[in-house]
Image (tube, rainbow, N blue to C red):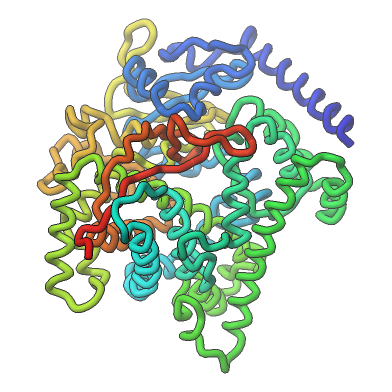
Length: 580
Protein backbone atom coordinates (compact mmCIF):
# COMPACT_ATOMS: atom_id res chain seq x y z
CA UNK A 1 0.00 0.00 0.00
CA UNK A 2 2.80 2.41 0.87
CA UNK A 3 4.45 1.78 -2.51
CA UNK A 4 1.17 2.49 -4.30
CA UNK A 5 0.82 5.79 -2.46
CA UNK A 6 4.37 6.74 -3.39
CA UNK A 7 3.71 5.92 -7.04
CA UNK A 8 0.51 7.96 -7.10
CA UNK A 9 2.25 10.86 -5.38
CA UNK A 10 5.11 10.66 -7.88
CA UNK A 11 2.73 10.83 -10.84
CA UNK A 12 0.95 13.89 -9.55
CA UNK A 13 4.20 15.51 -8.46
CA UNK A 14 5.59 15.03 -11.96
CA UNK A 15 2.45 16.54 -13.45
CA UNK A 16 2.68 19.49 -11.09
CA UNK A 17 6.35 20.06 -11.93
CA UNK A 18 5.57 19.98 -15.65
CA UNK A 19 2.74 22.47 -15.25
CA UNK A 20 4.88 24.71 -13.05
CA UNK A 21 7.66 24.66 -15.63
CA UNK A 22 5.16 25.59 -18.34
CA UNK A 23 3.76 28.47 -16.27
CA UNK A 24 7.22 29.75 -15.40
CA UNK A 25 8.85 29.71 -18.80
CA UNK A 26 5.96 29.81 -21.30
CA UNK A 27 2.86 31.41 -19.83
CA UNK A 28 2.78 35.03 -18.76
CA UNK A 29 2.56 35.68 -15.02
CA UNK A 30 -0.56 37.86 -14.52
CA UNK A 31 1.04 39.41 -11.44
CA UNK A 32 4.48 40.12 -12.89
CA UNK A 33 3.84 43.85 -12.58
CA UNK A 34 3.20 43.67 -8.82
CA UNK A 35 5.87 44.11 -6.21
CA UNK A 36 6.66 41.35 -3.76
CA UNK A 37 9.47 39.39 -2.10
CA UNK A 38 11.83 37.19 -4.13
CA UNK A 39 11.37 33.44 -3.98
CA UNK A 40 13.95 31.65 -1.81
CA UNK A 41 12.94 28.25 -3.23
CA UNK A 42 11.47 27.01 -6.53
CA UNK A 43 9.62 24.30 -4.61
CA UNK A 44 8.29 26.05 -1.50
CA UNK A 45 8.51 29.73 -2.43
CA UNK A 46 7.89 31.88 0.64
CA UNK A 47 5.42 29.45 2.19
CA UNK A 48 7.68 28.29 5.00
CA UNK A 49 8.15 31.86 6.20
CA UNK A 50 4.49 32.79 5.72
CA UNK A 51 3.34 29.86 7.84
CA UNK A 52 6.25 29.84 10.26
CA UNK A 53 5.26 29.34 13.87
CA UNK A 54 7.93 31.80 14.95
CA UNK A 55 5.46 34.65 15.03
CA UNK A 56 4.39 37.28 12.57
CA UNK A 57 7.57 39.32 12.22
CA UNK A 58 8.04 38.23 8.60
CA UNK A 59 4.53 39.49 7.79
CA UNK A 60 5.31 42.84 9.41
CA UNK A 61 8.41 43.18 7.22
CA UNK A 62 6.45 42.34 4.07
CA UNK A 63 3.69 44.89 4.57
CA UNK A 64 6.17 47.58 5.60
CA UNK A 65 8.00 47.03 2.31
CA UNK A 66 5.20 46.25 -0.15
CA UNK A 67 1.99 47.75 1.23
CA UNK A 68 -1.57 46.48 1.43
CA UNK A 69 -1.62 44.20 -1.64
CA UNK A 70 1.34 42.41 -3.22
CA UNK A 71 2.45 39.15 -4.77
CA UNK A 72 4.12 36.32 -2.80
CA UNK A 73 5.84 33.28 -4.36
CA UNK A 74 4.03 30.05 -3.47
CA UNK A 75 4.58 26.36 -4.10
CA UNK A 76 6.30 25.46 -7.38
CA UNK A 77 6.54 29.04 -8.59
CA UNK A 78 2.86 29.75 -8.15
CA UNK A 79 1.87 33.23 -6.99
CA UNK A 80 -0.29 34.15 -4.02
CA UNK A 81 -1.84 37.55 -3.47
CA UNK A 82 -1.23 38.90 0.03
CA UNK A 83 -3.93 41.44 0.86
CA UNK A 84 -5.38 43.41 3.74
CA UNK A 85 -6.66 46.51 1.94
CA UNK A 86 -10.20 47.12 3.36
CA UNK A 87 -11.83 47.72 -0.03
CA UNK A 88 -10.32 44.56 -1.47
CA UNK A 89 -11.39 42.61 1.63
CA UNK A 90 -14.94 43.91 1.18
CA UNK A 91 -15.05 42.51 -2.35
CA UNK A 92 -13.54 39.17 -1.30
CA UNK A 93 -15.70 38.58 1.77
CA UNK A 94 -18.97 40.37 0.96
CA UNK A 95 -19.56 41.69 -2.56
CA UNK A 96 -17.92 38.98 -4.68
CA UNK A 97 -18.23 35.85 -2.55
CA UNK A 98 -19.36 33.99 -5.68
CA UNK A 99 -15.85 34.58 -7.03
CA UNK A 100 -13.68 34.35 -3.91
CA UNK A 101 -14.37 31.21 -1.92
CA UNK A 102 -12.67 28.88 0.53
CA UNK A 103 -9.95 26.90 -1.25
CA UNK A 104 -11.12 23.58 -2.68
CA UNK A 105 -8.43 21.57 -0.88
CA UNK A 106 -9.24 23.43 2.37
CA UNK A 107 -12.93 22.54 2.05
CA UNK A 108 -12.15 18.92 1.21
CA UNK A 109 -9.78 18.64 4.16
CA UNK A 110 -12.44 20.10 6.46
CA UNK A 111 -15.05 17.71 5.11
CA UNK A 112 -12.72 14.77 5.62
CA UNK A 113 -11.82 15.63 9.19
CA UNK A 114 -14.92 17.47 10.46
CA UNK A 115 -17.68 16.01 8.35
CA UNK A 116 -20.07 18.05 6.23
CA UNK A 117 -20.36 20.92 8.70
CA UNK A 118 -20.40 24.70 8.48
CA UNK A 119 -16.69 25.04 7.66
CA UNK A 120 -16.78 22.38 4.93
CA UNK A 121 -19.65 23.56 2.74
CA UNK A 122 -20.32 26.51 0.44
CA UNK A 123 -23.18 28.04 -1.49
CA UNK A 124 -26.70 26.78 -0.80
CA UNK A 125 -25.49 24.14 1.67
CA UNK A 126 -23.74 26.81 3.73
CA UNK A 127 -26.76 29.13 3.66
CA UNK A 128 -29.06 26.27 4.68
CA UNK A 129 -26.88 25.27 7.64
CA UNK A 130 -26.40 28.85 8.74
CA UNK A 131 -30.16 29.50 8.62
CA UNK A 132 -30.85 26.58 10.97
CA UNK A 133 -27.98 27.52 13.31
CA UNK A 134 -28.61 31.28 13.59
CA UNK A 135 -31.29 31.09 16.33
CA UNK A 136 -28.86 29.26 18.63
CA UNK A 137 -26.46 32.22 18.47
CA UNK A 138 -29.01 35.03 18.82
CA UNK A 139 -28.81 37.64 21.58
CA UNK A 140 -32.02 36.17 23.02
CA UNK A 141 -30.30 32.82 23.42
CA UNK A 142 -27.16 34.43 24.84
CA UNK A 143 -29.32 35.97 27.58
CA UNK A 144 -30.77 32.56 28.38
CA UNK A 145 -27.33 30.94 28.55
CA UNK A 146 -25.75 33.58 30.80
CA UNK A 147 -26.60 31.76 34.08
CA UNK A 148 -24.95 28.61 32.72
CA UNK A 149 -21.83 30.62 31.91
CA UNK A 150 -21.70 32.04 35.42
CA UNK A 151 -22.13 28.62 37.02
CA UNK A 152 -19.09 27.31 35.17
CA UNK A 153 -16.94 30.39 35.79
CA UNK A 154 -17.76 30.31 39.52
CA UNK A 155 -16.31 26.79 39.64
CA UNK A 156 -13.18 28.12 37.94
CA UNK A 157 -12.96 31.00 40.44
CA UNK A 158 -13.34 28.65 43.41
CA UNK A 159 -10.66 26.25 42.16
CA UNK A 160 -8.13 29.04 41.60
CA UNK A 161 -9.03 30.48 45.01
CA UNK A 162 -7.97 27.19 46.62
CA UNK A 163 -4.66 27.34 44.76
CA UNK A 164 -3.83 30.85 46.02
CA UNK A 165 -5.42 30.66 49.48
CA UNK A 166 -1.99 30.65 51.14
CA UNK A 167 -0.57 33.46 49.03
CA UNK A 168 0.53 34.33 45.51
CA UNK A 169 1.13 31.41 43.16
CA UNK A 170 2.46 31.03 39.64
CA UNK A 171 -0.34 29.39 37.68
CA UNK A 172 -0.68 28.29 34.07
CA UNK A 173 -3.62 30.46 33.05
CA UNK A 174 -3.76 28.92 29.56
CA UNK A 175 -4.57 25.53 31.04
CA UNK A 176 -7.42 26.97 33.09
CA UNK A 177 -8.79 28.99 30.18
CA UNK A 178 -8.70 25.97 27.87
CA UNK A 179 -10.50 23.77 30.40
CA UNK A 180 -13.07 26.48 31.04
CA UNK A 181 -13.69 27.14 27.35
CA UNK A 182 -14.21 23.43 26.71
CA UNK A 183 -16.70 23.18 29.58
CA UNK A 184 -18.53 26.31 28.43
CA UNK A 185 -19.00 24.97 24.91
CA UNK A 186 -19.81 21.53 26.34
CA UNK A 187 -22.62 22.66 28.62
CA UNK A 188 -24.00 25.61 26.67
CA UNK A 189 -23.34 24.02 23.29
CA UNK A 190 -24.34 20.41 23.80
CA UNK A 191 -25.74 19.91 27.30
CA UNK A 192 -22.62 17.87 28.09
CA UNK A 193 -20.01 18.24 30.83
CA UNK A 194 -16.36 17.58 30.00
CA UNK A 195 -14.69 18.89 33.16
CA UNK A 196 -15.64 19.53 36.80
CA UNK A 197 -12.93 22.24 36.88
CA UNK A 198 -11.36 20.86 40.03
CA UNK A 199 -7.62 21.35 40.40
CA UNK A 200 -5.72 18.18 39.45
CA UNK A 201 -8.94 16.44 38.36
CA UNK A 202 -8.44 13.68 35.76
CA UNK A 203 -8.89 14.81 32.19
CA UNK A 204 -11.87 13.81 30.11
CA UNK A 205 -10.62 11.54 27.28
CA UNK A 206 -11.81 14.09 24.72
CA UNK A 207 -9.81 16.88 26.35
CA UNK A 208 -6.75 14.64 26.55
CA UNK A 209 -7.10 13.79 22.87
CA UNK A 210 -7.18 17.46 21.94
CA UNK A 211 -4.07 18.12 24.00
CA UNK A 212 -2.25 15.13 22.51
CA UNK A 213 -3.03 16.31 19.01
CA UNK A 214 -1.58 19.73 19.74
CA UNK A 215 1.83 18.13 20.05
CA UNK A 216 1.90 16.22 16.77
CA UNK A 217 5.31 17.26 15.33
CA UNK A 218 6.24 17.75 11.70
CA UNK A 219 7.84 14.30 11.58
CA UNK A 220 4.55 12.69 12.60
CA UNK A 221 2.32 14.58 10.20
CA UNK A 222 2.63 12.17 7.28
CA UNK A 223 0.58 9.57 9.20
CA UNK A 224 -2.05 12.26 9.64
CA UNK A 225 -2.35 12.71 5.91
CA UNK A 226 -2.57 9.00 5.31
CA UNK A 227 -5.38 9.11 7.84
CA UNK A 228 -6.96 12.00 5.96
CA UNK A 229 -6.86 9.97 2.77
CA UNK A 230 -8.34 6.79 4.22
CA UNK A 231 -10.87 7.98 6.80
CA UNK A 232 -14.27 9.57 6.74
CA UNK A 233 -15.86 12.17 9.01
CA UNK A 234 -13.31 11.95 11.82
CA UNK A 235 -13.17 14.91 14.17
CA UNK A 236 -9.48 15.75 14.08
CA UNK A 237 -8.09 19.21 14.47
CA UNK A 238 -6.05 20.23 11.43
CA UNK A 239 -3.78 22.95 12.67
CA UNK A 240 -1.40 25.26 10.88
CA UNK A 241 1.02 22.44 10.20
CA UNK A 242 -1.35 21.34 7.46
CA UNK A 243 -0.23 24.44 5.58
CA UNK A 244 3.47 23.73 5.97
CA UNK A 245 4.90 23.33 2.45
CA UNK A 246 5.90 19.68 2.69
CA UNK A 247 2.58 18.81 4.32
CA UNK A 248 0.55 20.57 1.64
CA UNK A 249 1.86 18.25 -1.05
CA UNK A 250 0.14 14.97 -0.06
CA UNK A 251 -3.01 16.92 0.77
CA UNK A 252 -3.13 18.67 -2.61
CA UNK A 253 -1.93 15.70 -4.68
CA UNK A 254 -3.71 12.77 -3.04
CA UNK A 255 -6.77 13.86 -1.12
CA UNK A 256 -8.96 15.01 -4.04
CA UNK A 257 -8.44 11.70 -5.85
CA UNK A 258 -8.50 9.01 -3.19
CA UNK A 259 -10.62 10.35 -0.33
CA UNK A 260 -13.49 8.19 -1.60
CA UNK A 261 -11.38 5.17 -2.49
CA UNK A 262 -13.38 2.13 -1.42
CA UNK A 263 -15.81 2.10 1.49
CA UNK A 264 -15.15 3.64 4.93
CA UNK A 265 -14.77 0.10 6.31
CA UNK A 266 -12.14 -0.68 3.68
CA UNK A 267 -10.18 2.49 4.40
CA UNK A 268 -10.30 1.78 8.13
CA UNK A 269 -9.04 -1.76 7.54
CA UNK A 270 -6.08 -0.36 5.61
CA UNK A 271 -5.20 1.94 8.51
CA UNK A 272 -5.45 -0.87 11.06
CA UNK A 273 -3.31 -3.18 8.93
CA UNK A 274 -0.43 -0.78 8.33
CA UNK A 275 2.42 -1.33 10.85
CA UNK A 276 2.74 2.40 11.56
CA UNK A 277 2.66 3.55 15.18
CA UNK A 278 2.35 7.25 14.36
CA UNK A 279 -0.65 6.54 12.16
CA UNK A 280 -2.27 4.45 14.89
CA UNK A 281 -1.69 7.18 17.48
CA UNK A 282 -3.57 9.69 15.34
CA UNK A 283 -6.26 7.08 14.64
CA UNK A 284 -6.80 6.54 18.37
CA UNK A 285 -7.08 10.29 18.99
CA UNK A 286 -9.63 10.56 16.20
CA UNK A 287 -11.61 7.61 17.55
CA UNK A 288 -12.02 9.23 20.97
CA UNK A 289 -13.20 12.48 19.42
CA UNK A 290 -15.58 10.74 17.04
CA UNK A 291 -17.01 8.52 19.79
CA UNK A 292 -17.64 11.51 22.05
CA UNK A 293 -19.33 13.47 19.27
CA UNK A 294 -21.66 10.55 18.52
CA UNK A 295 -22.42 10.14 22.23
CA UNK A 296 -23.37 13.82 22.53
CA UNK A 297 -25.53 13.69 19.42
CA UNK A 298 -27.41 10.53 20.36
CA UNK A 299 -28.01 11.79 23.91
CA UNK A 300 -29.48 15.03 22.58
CA UNK A 301 -31.75 13.19 20.16
CA UNK A 302 -33.03 10.84 22.88
CA UNK A 303 -33.80 13.72 25.22
CA UNK A 304 -35.71 15.56 22.52
CA UNK A 305 -37.75 12.51 21.52
CA UNK A 306 -38.68 11.58 25.08
CA UNK A 307 -41.77 13.66 25.76
CA UNK A 308 -41.61 12.66 29.42
CA UNK A 309 -38.10 13.95 29.93
CA UNK A 310 -37.62 17.19 31.82
CA UNK A 311 -35.25 19.16 29.64
CA UNK A 312 -34.47 21.43 32.58
CA UNK A 313 -32.67 18.49 34.23
CA UNK A 314 -30.17 18.25 31.41
CA UNK A 315 -26.75 19.85 31.74
CA UNK A 316 -27.30 23.43 30.62
CA UNK A 317 -31.02 23.25 31.38
CA UNK A 318 -31.99 22.15 27.88
CA UNK A 319 -31.04 25.55 26.47
CA UNK A 320 -27.88 24.34 24.78
CA UNK A 321 -27.12 24.98 21.12
CA UNK A 322 -27.64 21.34 20.11
CA UNK A 323 -31.12 21.19 21.66
CA UNK A 324 -32.13 24.38 19.86
CA UNK A 325 -30.60 23.12 16.60
CA UNK A 326 -32.55 19.85 16.78
CA UNK A 327 -35.81 21.66 17.55
CA UNK A 328 -35.25 24.14 14.72
CA UNK A 329 -34.46 21.29 12.37
CA UNK A 330 -37.70 19.49 13.22
CA UNK A 331 -39.69 22.60 12.32
CA UNK A 332 -37.67 23.42 9.20
CA UNK A 333 -39.06 23.03 5.71
CA UNK A 334 -38.09 19.93 3.79
CA UNK A 335 -35.54 21.80 1.67
CA UNK A 336 -33.92 23.37 4.76
CA UNK A 337 -33.70 20.28 6.98
CA UNK A 338 -30.23 19.08 7.90
CA UNK A 339 -29.50 15.34 7.76
CA UNK A 340 -28.00 13.71 10.85
CA UNK A 341 -24.60 13.65 9.15
CA UNK A 342 -24.51 17.45 8.95
CA UNK A 343 -25.76 17.97 12.51
CA UNK A 344 -23.15 15.57 13.86
CA UNK A 345 -20.46 17.42 11.93
CA UNK A 346 -21.25 20.65 13.79
CA UNK A 347 -20.23 19.17 17.17
CA UNK A 348 -16.48 18.95 16.68
CA UNK A 349 -16.57 22.07 14.51
CA UNK A 350 -18.04 24.14 17.34
CA UNK A 351 -15.90 22.54 20.04
CA UNK A 352 -12.67 23.49 18.30
CA UNK A 353 -13.92 26.87 17.12
CA UNK A 354 -15.30 27.69 20.55
CA UNK A 355 -12.43 26.35 22.62
CA UNK A 356 -9.03 27.09 21.16
CA UNK A 357 -9.58 30.61 19.87
CA UNK A 358 -11.33 32.13 22.89
CA UNK A 359 -9.16 30.36 25.46
CA UNK A 360 -6.02 31.84 23.92
CA UNK A 361 -7.66 35.28 23.65
CA UNK A 362 -8.63 35.13 27.33
CA UNK A 363 -5.20 33.93 28.45
CA UNK A 364 -3.57 36.73 26.50
CA UNK A 365 -5.92 39.36 27.93
CA UNK A 366 -5.18 38.25 31.49
CA UNK A 367 -1.46 38.35 30.74
CA UNK A 368 -1.85 41.88 29.34
CA UNK A 369 -3.78 42.96 32.43
CA UNK A 370 -0.88 41.66 34.50
CA UNK A 371 1.52 43.82 32.50
CA UNK A 372 -0.72 46.91 32.82
CA UNK A 373 -1.67 47.19 36.48
CA UNK A 374 -3.37 50.56 36.02
CA UNK A 375 -5.75 49.11 33.44
CA UNK A 376 -6.38 46.08 35.65
CA UNK A 377 -7.23 48.34 38.61
CA UNK A 378 -9.59 50.47 36.52
CA UNK A 379 -11.34 47.38 35.21
CA UNK A 380 -11.70 45.92 38.70
CA UNK A 381 -13.20 49.17 39.95
CA UNK A 382 -15.80 49.21 37.17
CA UNK A 383 -16.78 45.59 37.77
CA UNK A 384 -16.94 45.97 41.56
CA UNK A 385 -19.14 49.05 41.32
CA UNK A 386 -21.49 47.31 38.90
CA UNK A 387 -21.72 44.20 41.07
CA UNK A 388 -22.27 46.34 44.17
CA UNK A 389 -25.50 47.71 42.74
CA UNK A 390 -26.82 44.28 41.71
CA UNK A 391 -27.93 41.25 43.65
CA UNK A 392 -26.10 38.18 42.46
CA UNK A 393 -24.47 37.95 39.06
CA UNK A 394 -24.75 40.69 36.48
CA UNK A 395 -27.41 40.05 33.88
CA UNK A 396 -26.48 39.80 30.21
CA UNK A 397 -27.31 43.38 29.29
CA UNK A 398 -25.50 44.93 32.25
CA UNK A 399 -22.44 42.75 31.72
CA UNK A 400 -22.13 43.37 28.00
CA UNK A 401 -22.62 47.12 28.39
CA UNK A 402 -19.85 47.74 30.94
CA UNK A 403 -17.82 50.27 28.91
CA UNK A 404 -14.29 49.56 30.12
CA UNK A 405 -14.73 45.79 30.16
CA UNK A 406 -15.97 46.10 26.60
CA UNK A 407 -12.96 48.28 25.72
CA UNK A 408 -10.50 45.74 27.17
CA UNK A 409 -12.07 42.90 25.19
CA UNK A 410 -12.24 44.89 21.96
CA UNK A 411 -8.63 46.00 22.21
CA UNK A 412 -7.34 42.48 22.88
CA UNK A 413 -9.30 41.10 19.94
CA UNK A 414 -8.16 43.95 17.68
CA UNK A 415 -4.47 43.77 18.46
CA UNK A 416 -4.23 40.02 18.84
CA UNK A 417 -6.78 38.18 16.68
CA UNK A 418 -6.50 34.49 17.65
CA UNK A 419 -6.46 33.48 13.97
CA UNK A 420 -4.18 36.00 12.23
CA UNK A 421 -5.03 35.14 8.62
CA UNK A 422 -7.30 33.15 6.32
CA UNK A 423 -7.06 31.91 2.73
CA UNK A 424 -9.41 32.32 -0.21
CA UNK A 425 -9.36 31.02 -3.80
CA UNK A 426 -10.62 32.73 -6.94
CA UNK A 427 -13.04 30.21 -8.43
CA UNK A 428 -13.61 32.54 -11.40
CA UNK A 429 -11.85 35.54 -12.90
CA UNK A 430 -12.34 38.66 -10.82
CA UNK A 431 -11.10 42.17 -10.12
CA UNK A 432 -9.96 43.53 -6.77
CA UNK A 433 -10.25 47.31 -6.32
CA UNK A 434 -8.19 48.91 -3.55
CA UNK A 435 -8.73 51.93 -1.32
CA UNK A 436 -5.10 53.03 -1.61
CA UNK A 437 -3.25 52.95 -4.96
CA UNK A 438 -0.77 50.14 -5.54
CA UNK A 439 2.70 51.07 -6.77
CA UNK A 440 3.82 48.62 -9.45
CA UNK A 441 7.38 47.54 -10.16
CA UNK A 442 7.77 50.24 -12.80
CA UNK A 443 6.43 52.96 -10.50
CA UNK A 444 2.91 53.22 -11.91
CA UNK A 445 -0.12 53.68 -9.66
CA UNK A 446 -3.02 51.27 -10.17
CA UNK A 447 -6.37 51.12 -8.36
CA UNK A 448 -7.37 47.54 -9.09
CA UNK A 449 -5.84 44.15 -9.80
CA UNK A 450 -7.14 41.48 -12.17
CA UNK A 451 -7.26 38.11 -10.39
CA UNK A 452 -7.53 35.08 -12.69
CA UNK A 453 -9.35 31.91 -11.73
CA UNK A 454 -7.28 29.60 -9.53
CA UNK A 455 -5.38 32.35 -7.70
CA UNK A 456 -4.92 31.82 -3.97
CA UNK A 457 -5.32 34.87 -1.74
CA UNK A 458 -3.76 35.33 1.68
CA UNK A 459 -5.98 37.63 3.79
CA UNK A 460 -4.18 39.14 6.77
CA UNK A 461 -6.63 39.97 9.56
CA UNK A 462 -3.69 40.79 11.80
CA UNK A 463 -2.36 43.51 9.53
CA UNK A 464 -5.74 45.11 8.83
CA UNK A 465 -6.36 45.39 12.57
CA UNK A 466 -3.00 47.13 13.04
CA UNK A 467 -2.72 49.42 10.02
CA UNK A 468 -1.30 52.74 11.37
CA UNK A 469 -2.96 54.76 8.60
CA UNK A 470 -6.30 53.48 9.87
CA UNK A 471 -5.81 53.03 13.62
CA UNK A 472 -3.23 55.73 14.27
CA UNK A 473 0.44 55.77 15.30
CA UNK A 474 -0.26 53.61 18.37
CA UNK A 475 -1.93 50.89 16.27
CA UNK A 476 0.57 48.26 17.46
CA UNK A 477 0.01 49.10 21.15
CA UNK A 478 -2.54 47.62 23.55
CA UNK A 479 -4.57 50.66 24.54
CA UNK A 480 -8.14 49.96 25.72
CA UNK A 481 -8.67 53.68 26.24
CA UNK A 482 -8.99 54.12 22.46
CA UNK A 483 -12.48 52.63 22.75
CA UNK A 484 -13.62 55.03 25.49
CA UNK A 485 -14.11 57.88 23.02
CA UNK A 486 -15.24 58.01 19.38
CA UNK A 487 -12.85 56.28 17.01
CA UNK A 488 -10.92 58.50 14.58
CA UNK A 489 -12.52 59.15 11.22
CA UNK A 490 -9.77 57.12 9.54
CA UNK A 491 -11.31 53.99 11.08
CA UNK A 492 -14.88 54.67 10.04
CA UNK A 493 -13.85 56.00 6.63
CA UNK A 494 -11.85 52.82 5.93
CA UNK A 495 -15.10 50.82 5.85
CA UNK A 496 -13.47 47.69 7.18
CA UNK A 497 -15.83 44.82 6.30
CA UNK A 498 -15.61 43.06 9.67
CA UNK A 499 -18.78 41.98 11.45
CA UNK A 500 -17.46 43.30 14.78
CA UNK A 501 -16.22 46.75 15.78
CA UNK A 502 -14.43 47.84 12.58
CA UNK A 503 -12.00 44.95 12.88
CA UNK A 504 -11.43 41.73 10.95
CA UNK A 505 -11.07 39.36 13.90
CA UNK A 506 -14.43 37.64 13.31
CA UNK A 507 -14.37 38.20 9.53
CA UNK A 508 -17.34 39.63 7.65
CA UNK A 509 -19.95 38.58 5.14
CA UNK A 510 -21.77 35.24 4.90
CA UNK A 511 -18.79 33.28 6.26
CA UNK A 512 -18.20 35.51 9.28
CA UNK A 513 -17.90 33.82 12.67
CA UNK A 514 -21.38 32.68 13.67
CA UNK A 515 -20.32 32.43 17.32
CA UNK A 516 -18.82 35.87 17.86
CA UNK A 517 -21.49 36.88 20.41
CA UNK A 518 -20.85 33.61 22.24
CA UNK A 519 -17.14 34.42 22.34
CA UNK A 520 -17.77 37.93 23.66
CA UNK A 521 -20.06 36.64 26.41
CA UNK A 522 -17.45 34.06 27.38
CA UNK A 523 -14.66 36.63 27.62
CA UNK A 524 -16.73 39.10 29.62
CA UNK A 525 -18.10 36.52 32.03
CA UNK A 526 -14.66 35.09 32.79
CA UNK A 527 -12.96 38.48 33.16
CA UNK A 528 -15.73 40.00 35.28
CA UNK A 529 -15.58 37.15 37.78
CA UNK A 530 -11.81 36.63 37.92
CA UNK A 531 -10.68 40.26 37.95
CA UNK A 532 -12.99 40.99 40.86
CA UNK A 533 -11.46 38.16 42.93
CA UNK A 534 -7.81 38.03 41.82
CA UNK A 535 -4.79 40.19 41.09
CA UNK A 536 -2.70 39.19 38.09
CA UNK A 537 1.00 39.95 37.62
CA UNK A 538 3.70 38.85 35.13
CA UNK A 539 5.53 35.64 35.93
CA UNK A 540 8.88 37.00 34.78
CA UNK A 541 9.06 34.35 32.07
CA UNK A 542 9.65 35.34 28.44
CA UNK A 543 6.38 34.48 26.69
CA UNK A 544 6.59 33.44 23.03
CA UNK A 545 3.42 33.47 20.95
CA UNK A 546 3.58 30.82 18.23
CA UNK A 547 1.60 30.97 15.02
CA UNK A 548 0.01 27.52 14.85
CA UNK A 549 -2.89 28.73 12.75
CA UNK A 550 -4.12 30.00 16.10
CA UNK A 551 -1.73 32.12 18.14
CA UNK A 552 -0.64 30.03 21.13
CA UNK A 553 1.75 30.81 24.00
CA UNK A 554 4.77 29.06 25.35
CA UNK A 555 7.91 30.28 27.11
CA UNK A 556 11.56 30.23 26.12
CA UNK A 557 12.38 27.80 28.93
CA UNK A 558 9.21 25.71 28.62
CA UNK A 559 9.67 21.99 29.27
CA UNK A 560 9.67 19.76 26.24
CA UNK A 561 6.88 17.32 25.54
CA UNK A 562 7.54 13.67 24.77
CA UNK A 563 7.68 14.68 21.11
CA UNK A 564 10.40 17.26 21.71
CA UNK A 565 8.21 20.36 21.36
CA UNK A 566 7.92 23.19 23.85
CA UNK A 567 4.87 22.85 26.06
CA UNK A 568 2.06 25.31 25.41
CA UNK A 569 1.48 27.28 28.60
CA UNK A 570 1.22 30.81 29.97
CA UNK A 571 2.40 31.24 33.57
CA UNK A 572 0.93 34.19 35.49
CA UNK A 573 1.32 35.23 39.13
CA UNK A 574 -2.10 35.20 40.82
CA UNK A 575 -3.10 36.38 44.29
CA UNK A 576 -6.32 37.27 46.09
CA UNK A 577 -7.52 40.87 45.96
CA UNK A 578 -8.74 40.58 49.55
CA UNK A 579 -6.86 37.82 51.39
CA UNK A 580 -8.77 36.56 54.40
